[in-house]
Amino acid sequence: MIHYFKNIFETVTTLLQGLGITFVHLLRIRKNNVTLQYPEERWPQPQRNIGFEHNSYNVIRSRLEVDIEDCTGCMQCVRACPVDCIKIDTVKVPKDTDIGTTSNDTKKRLLVTRFDIDMSECCFCNLCTYPCPEDCIYMTGGPNSKKHPIDYEYSTYDRSDLIFRFANVTEEQIERITKPAQPGEQTNNG
Amino acid sequence: MGVRQTEEMVLNIGPQHPSTHGVLRLKVKTDGEIVTAVTPVIGYLHRCFEKHCENITYEQIIPYVDRCDYIASMNNDFGYVLAMEAMLEIEVPEKVQYIRIIMAEMNRIASHLLALGTFGLDVGAFTPFLYMFRDRERILDLFELTCGARLLYNYMWIGGLSHDIPPGFVEKTYEFLDYFLPQLDEYNNLLTFNKIFIERTADVGILTPDLAINYGVTGPNLRGSGVKWDLRKDESYSIYDRFDFAIPVGTGIKGSVGDSWDRYWVRAEEMRESVKIIRQALDQMPRDGDVREAVPRRIRPPKGAIYSRSETPRGELGFYIISDGKPKPTRVKMRSPAFTALSVLSEISQGWMISDVLAILGSLDIVLGEIDR
Image 1 (cartoon, one colour):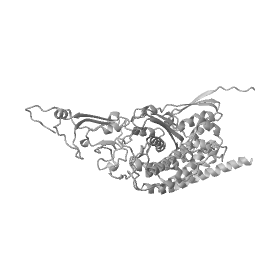
Image 2 (cartoon, chains in turn purple, red):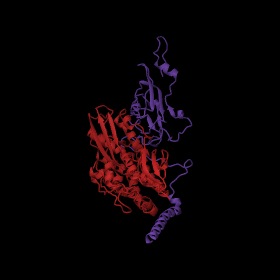
Image 3 (spheres, one colour):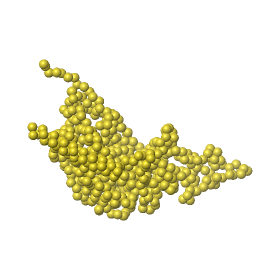
């Protein structure tokens, strides 16, 4: 009998204890509020401009972006990707043809005809961004916000819209660049 | 009136069920409300982890290891990089060791918070779940600050870390620890010592020490049965021997040793110990140093095999890696602690009610990503 009442007493006291905690939180609702009305309000992006030698460390996971003008087609990112979501096609350009240099003053020897990243396959491991010798593949925002503003809300209605195509050469350009110049004809490089 | 014979009924719980912590199907044979047999059906989350590892390089395995136990990715990474470093005989810089310990222990707290919160949710307590997730969020914010990801970090690399901790991280972590310790008492008042919760969990699903050892159960589940076995202390890896912390074991305060409440209590106390470890590590950590100093340019381990184990929030995580001198492993075998914890479920849940089976399952704290791999 005593046990029965003791049980009830313990239940009521511990319940009240728990309710007390929630009640305190209810009273200080403004201070303890931790949620945001998402589409209207957003959490601030953490300041992550870190790194010991260079400050372009890629410490954000948002969307992969490629500065195609800087890409030399070295395929390092393709080799690093564990899920093979980066697809690059290159063509060799003739020796005397100049297709420009990157911003690091590396001469480009390959013409990148296709640079597709399927973001629906991407596992956001960031492994592709580290080996890039030209720092031209990176996640948007964070320390790279100068290069590209953050873009993490890229939901689409169609899966194929998640394949981002970065190569910007047309068929004509490829043909013009790769075709060896005919004798007597004027060469047009570029 | 004679004894009324009732027919046995097979009840399916899952695969899509909030109490099964993932996609787990339980075939429960019931006699009335009493459970006579439980058969877990696994494999819904199978992703061919071990076979897949044979086709990718050693660095590329780390994102996949992350995805095994997705609640405690840092600890999984830690286990894998320890195995690889032992194989390659890499000496890791001091600072890296400390950062790894801090990250692993923070992830342990985050994992236990999720385990305890969802355990409360399984037995019908909704509020503690929200409180614990609120605090877990703070840890995830710290991780996001460090490596950009809130889950699946790919932060620990073989021989180092992907990059240094950001400025202000140490102060923010201290701030979090100061905030977090009083919260532990709040959880205790809210859930742990709640009479209804004790009635639901104490004396339910008793896992005796013998049974636990026979099944190979490790981690908090084993310690809840009163066996003092923690790899961080007993087979001290990395620099765990430099820290002063206790190993909480179940003593049967509210029921008998090895019941669901004991398993809960061990986790709750372990968070307190983790806070201690993080505080010591932050105090002792050298402030400067290159974290990528020892990262090898090409990873090509010599011919041979290695087995290395470490203590994750779920228990003993082992990696058996065979190399034949190529950049890709020949075989990677993962010894998953959650798998053994699940295998003991059918043994300890016989004779309990259906709702108790879910309480026992919640107390075992399984992660299906690790079981199915």
